[in-house]
Length: 111
Image 1 (cartoon, rainbow, N blue to C red):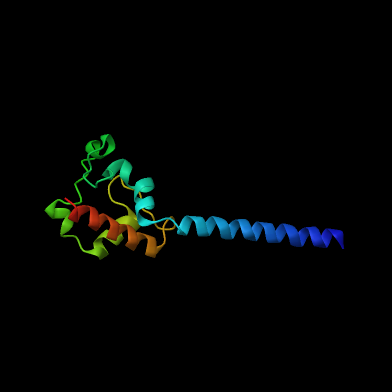
Image 2: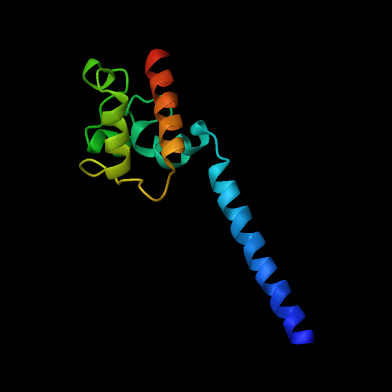
């Protein structure tokens, strides 16, 4: 009986940890996701004015050729990557990707 109770407690603990990890990853705001995954190349303001951004010739989110892209095109690039940019399929949910795109569009409008 004691072994059975320990197994149930262990299973519950593992389940609880998994739920907490998933919730904490999904509870990040679009701004937090952008800062942790995008800003190193695209800059905090979306200008691309970072050492990595300059090296990879990242365009500003406010440049006309970037602004004209549809949300569907942005989702495609975010999910699958482009050039040296990694894809985020399996790392971000569809909703997180859409939220980040809205955040990026707000950066472009702020210019």
